[in-house]
Length: 504
Image 1 (cartoon, one colour):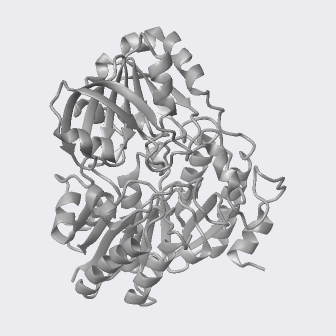
Image 2: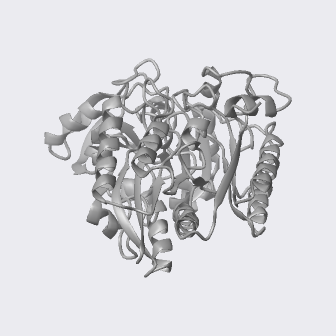
C-alpha cells in the first residue's frame, strides 16, 4: 500500500514597518488553491502560482512523489500566498490556518506532511505565527508523523519555529530560482523518512547578525564559496541537507539574525559540527556590507550616461527604498518626482500604488485630461503626495492589481494600480499597453527577482535610495535581544546563539 504525503503552503513575507495590515483577501486575490485545483496546478502541465511561478516548492514536492510512483500518494491540502506587505491581521492568520487544518483533518491518515512557508511572517502582536501554525499541525499529526518544511532563504529561524518540525530546507539561490529544487530535495528526504529509510537529525545555529555578505547574491564572490561549501557538505553520505538563511531585514523579531541548519541521517555529532562550520563561514563575511545606493538625481545621471545600454535595451532603476517584493507599499513618489523633473530626454515607465486614483479613473475615456495627486494615501510622511498632469492612455482591470490606469505624463508613462504593483516581469508594462523596448528606463520595485525576468532587456541595473520602508539601515532601528552586528561590536556569535537556542 502506498504511503500518503500531504502538502500545502501558507506563505507571507512581512515588513514590520508597513502600516498596511495583510488581510485574508490578500491571499485570495494573489494565490489561493485547495484540493484538486492545487494538484492540477502542481502537475507537470500545470502552473503552480499563476502569473508568478510555473514551478515552485509544491511542484518540486509533487515531482519527488512522481519519482516514487506506486510507493507514494500525494494529498493536496491548500496553497495560499500573498504579496509581501505589512503584518498579517490576526483574523487572516486564524482563517487561513483553520482552512489548512480542516483540509488536513479531512485527508484522514497521512504518513507525512510537507509545508512551504516563508519563514518571515509576523502579525502585529506575534513575531512567530508560523510557529503557532506548525504547532497546530504537529498536534493534528501526533509525535511520530514526519513534518517537513521549506523556507525562503530570507527566513527568520527560531527555536519555537523549528521545535515542531522533523526537518527544514531553505532555498540556496539569491535571486531565488530554486523553489522547485528545494521542494524536490525536501520531498525526497520526507519520503525516505516516511518509508523508514532515513532518520533525519538536524542541528541549527543563529547569529546576532542582520547585515553582511555584501549583496548576498549566491553567484558573487562573497557568498559563492559558502554555498559551494554547503554543496560539498552534502557529498558526505550521512548529510541530507544544509541551509543558510540570511534573514528578512524588516522582520520585527528581537532574535533576528542569520541562521545555519544542517540535517544528517541519524548523526547528531556530525550535524553539530557542520552547523558550527557553516555558522563560522557566515560570520566570516559579516564585515562585507551591502553597497551604498545613489540618490534619485545621481541615479538619473548614471542612466543618462549609459547611452549604449539604453540603445541596446533599457536601464532598470530599482527603487530600493520602496521594494514591494520586500513588503513596501509601492506608493513612494520620490523617484517618480525625480523622473518628471530631471528625466527629460529619456522615456521612463514607472508604477505607483494609488487605490483611489485607479478607481476614479476607471470610468473615464482614453485620451481625457488627467490632473490628480498620486501617492501619500497610506503613509504621507514617508511618501509625500505628488500632483501629476497628463492624459489617460488606458484603463483596465487586471488581477492581482485590480483597477489599472495608464497615464501619459510626457516622457514618463505612469501605471497606477488599485492593489500593490509588484513589478516582477516586463509583462507588467506590456500588459498595460506599454512596449518595454521603447523605453529608456524601467522602474522596478524589487531587489533581486526582476534580474531573472528582465534579463533579456535589462542592460544596466541601478539601485536607488529614495528614503522609504525598505531602506537597509531601517533594520538597525528594530529592538534586539542583545548586541547585534553591525549596530554593535560583537566579537563572537556563540553566546547569543546559545542563549537563543536555550543551550547551557
